Image (spheres, rainbow, N blue to C red):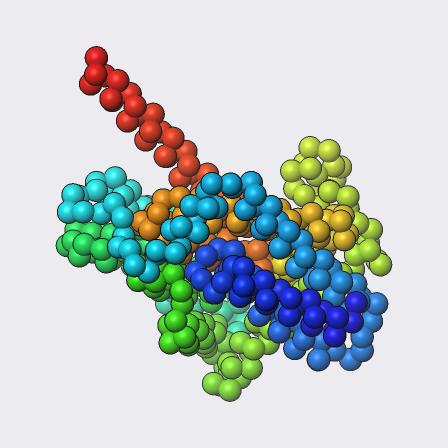
Length: 429
C-alpha cells in the first residue's frame, strides 16, 4: 500500500474519531487519537526520512491500514457486546459536564484512605530499602549519557513484578481516586492522604531513573482534574497538558543527557516520539518473515513455556540482536508481536481484540457514573494506552492495567455486594 492510500485511511479514521467517538477523555478516544498522531502523522514523518520506498514499507503501511479497520470493528463489536452498558455510557457522557461527582458526601470513607496509607508505606519502604536516594543523587550528578545509562541499567529495576504493577497501576488509581475525593469535598484528611501518596509515587517513579514514568503520573492527575469538571478537553487545557508534558519530558531528557543543549533536547524529543516509534515497527516487519519465519504463536511466552522447546526470547530482543544490539530491546506497538506470530491475520485479530477490550473498559468505568472510581479508572488507563503503543497487547492488558485493574475492581464490587446482601439477610433474621 502506498502513502496516498494510507492517507485516505487516516482521513476515514479521523472522521470516525470526530463523528463516532468524539474528542472526549475516554480510553477509546485516547487510544485512537494517539495512534493517529504517532502512527499517522508520525509515520509520514518517518517515511519522509527514508532513503527509498521498499516492499517492507508497502507491507507495513498495509498492516497499519488493516489495524485501523480492525480497531474500529473491535470497538463497534464492543458496543454490541456491552449492550445496555454502552447505552448507559452515552447517557452518563451526555450529562457529565452538568453533573457533580457522585458518592462523596461528608461521610469519611475509611477503605480508600487505609489502602492509600498502606501503599504509601510500601513505596517509601522499598524506596529506602533499595537505597534510592543515593541512586538519584548519583544520577543527578552524572555528567554524560554513558553514566546515566549505566545507572539506569544497574539500579532502575526493583526485581519484583508485583511491586512494579502496584507502582504503575494500582497506586496511581488510588491516588487519582483520593484526588477526586479531595476536589469534591475539600476534606483535610483526604488532602493529606492524597499528598502523601502522590509524593511517594513521584519519588518512586523518579527513582526508576527513566524519563517518562513520573511525567505520566502527573499527566494522570491533570486528566483527573479535568474530568471532575468536564469530559471534553478544551483547547487551552490540551495545550497546557501538551506543554507540560513536553517541558517535563524535556527536563527529564536533560537529566539523562546532560551534555546536550536545549536545541538538541528538542530534536531528541521529536526523534524519539515520531521517528523511533515507527522505526521499531519497521525493523520488526523487516526481519519477519524475510529473514526469520513467523513464529505461529510461539512468540507468546505462555505458549512457548507450555508447548515450545528451548529458551524463550521475545521478538523485541530478537530484532535488536539482528540489528547488532543483543543486549537491547527494540520496542514496538502491539501489532508488531501480532505480526511476528501470525502476519496480517495476527494484526487483524489482535487489533479487533484491542478495540473490543478498550471499549468494554470504557463501558465498565462509566457504569460507576460520574464518580471517583470512574475518573480514576479513565485517568489511570493512560498508562495502559501507552503500553499498547510500545509493547504487546497482553502485556498492556496485564502489566499496563487495562484489563487487570477493571478485573480487580469488578472482583471488589462483587465482594462488596455479597457482604451487603449477607448483612441485610442477617439484619432481617
